[in-house]
Amino acid sequence: MLVDSFGRTATDLRVSLTDRCNLRCTYCMPPEGLDWLPKPELLTADEIVRLVRIGVEGLGITEVRFTGGEPLLRRELVEIVTATAALSPRPQVSVTTNGIGLARLAGPLADAGLDRVNVSLDTLDRDTFVRLSHRDRLSDVLAGLAAAEAAGLNPVKVNAVLMRGVNENEAVPLLRYCLDRGYELRFIEQMPLDAQHGWQRENMITADEILGALKDAFDLTEDDPGKRGSAPAELFLVDGGPRRVGVIGSVTRPFCGACDRVRITADGQVRNCLFATEESDLRAALRAGASDEDLAERWMAAVRGKKAGHGIDDPAFLQPARPMSAIGG
Ligand code: SAM
Image (cartoon, rainbow, N blue to C red; front, side, top):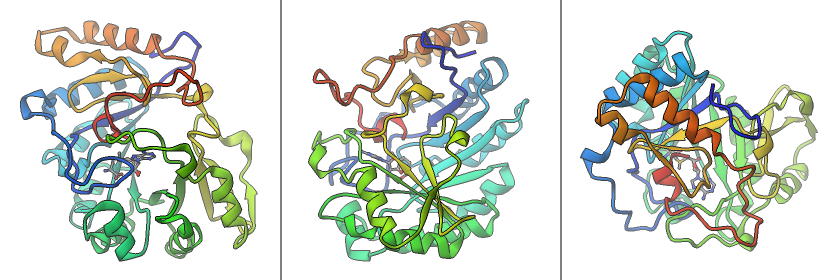
């Protein structure tokens, strides 16, 4: 088991399949993009599947989420999902995507055994989408969402980040859009994980602000807080339910005490927290011929060193060198 020194057990594995992305969301990277990892540094599909197998069969991982960068850019995605869904005990398998390309891939991914999808959608306004992501792809994202729903990847989840002066007025329209289509929306507070290091607390739209805006338009009641477990989102029933909305207060309402996540970057580094400043290199060991047991040992040691919390509020807080796109959100 992947247990840390505070007694938390990691069961939810996030695997980044690439650091590349076809959007340039301002909270993540600069308009010109970043220096992408050279291909030889990326784990191969076989290496990814081997690590996932070790996690699932030997270390208690029960959920595997593929992310990036943009995971749909990884050519072997369907094969990787197929191999993951064939593991025993079978993990829950999901993908976090910006939705571009999902119109084509939702069906094949569902057939491969994908259980769920989280699609990022921060705005319904085409001009705002271009301003926020530097690409004119809103219609592709909306088509991807519809395709995911049609392929049975339900409930389709939507992630939204609100930013002051950009899309802060979209909490209510985004929720209406999702409720009308049966998608489950989660707002995420903007975190200091952009490559430009431009995050400023005063520009972050807080969970309180989001809930305040939603409560002007909807009746929200907490959805049984006892059920939250390790889930980062606080869930609310909308207008009496059963439809729900979630708010992930990563910064102002941290949930580190219940964290059950561990990450592997596209170049094979274990990260025990989004904000970790240290990583453990599984790729070097893997390519040097390490056994499954040896890799599992290294992975367990990496999780053991997990800190109590992300420390954003600590005056000594240092933003990690890797931006979100290179960690795997
Ligand atoms: N490209 C995929 C996508 O757009 O969903 C997967 C990777 S992306 C890094 C994963 C999630 O992280 C997205 O929902 C995105 O909005 C979110 N994200 C990226 N940078 C963030 C930040 N600085 N604060 C909060 N969320 C962020």
